[in-house]
Image 1: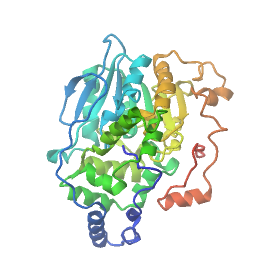
Image 2: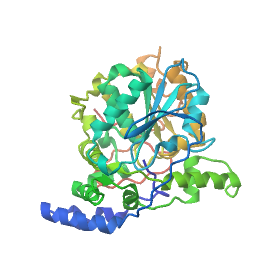
Image 3: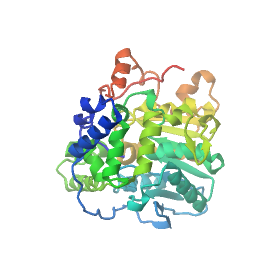
Image 4: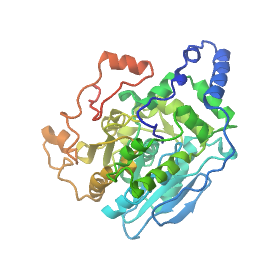
Length: 427
């Protein structure tokens, strides 16, 4: 998971016409190698320090690929597992700082038995590990905790959580997906446009340059700026602290520390995500296979909560909200909300943590049913499924013009104003 500074799109050189237009495999491979070296340059040998976590906790289990962090305060409670993103930044984003900790917000709202997946940076001997390997390790964590669990998937951890819930339905009691790319074709975004417009050979060359892994620092240079400006940090954190205050300066420092500390990814995992999820859209189309079995989302019936950010430049809200029509969960058991802010604000934004996540915890506990469609007439269910009262037709309207579809095919993203509006594609 990463957040470009400001509102810029990925490095324009990424769409180098000569590379995209390469017609033969040899030419494409040669152009990809030249471009990858030009775009990212060498990667230093610096070893990042261990990330800081704001909330005291224990390590419940440690595997080669992941640590299971235990934030439990009471053992005789239903267990919740935060499936953090396995992307370019670490899971410490879930516990960034006091007042900006999703872990603390969930515990304060009532989740007393809480765990977090802390995916580890890939080493040279882990390049062969693919999606199946990480799903298998997620299954080990769930067994260690004790199924069934309430599974909360964040960003790239969201599609993994959904695939897991569909593959092992008896092990997931309730499912929460926040800022997760599920149906890539539902709407354009900067990230999906980046993947679509780029030949797979570019990504393969990056893995070759990393000796079988994808170095996080290399990919960050490829994606965009190495730093985040102060205004962007304040927007992401949704902080009201004075800009020149010591508290604000400390928060900016903590965020920049997290942002600058990248992790390396298994090359096989990275290439499978690009090809299967972003280029082929396999989860949404029903072609995705997890641990030897086809993932049939229509057979996944766990109560599900969908949370998107209104101004998310990485995962367009329709890419997540399309889940509603893909899964087999009945309408009264699906809730959704559109929170103000950008992608990372879903996990560190003070407003979102204070206003949105406590409501989700009440939904998990079954005490916030007034607006989740229970007892609602079919006519009113669409609005009833918005626990925050923010996801409705009036606010989320418009956008699939021929011009928008043409832009999406070109691999670019339609510029949006604050307060993104959309509607689901017709079925």
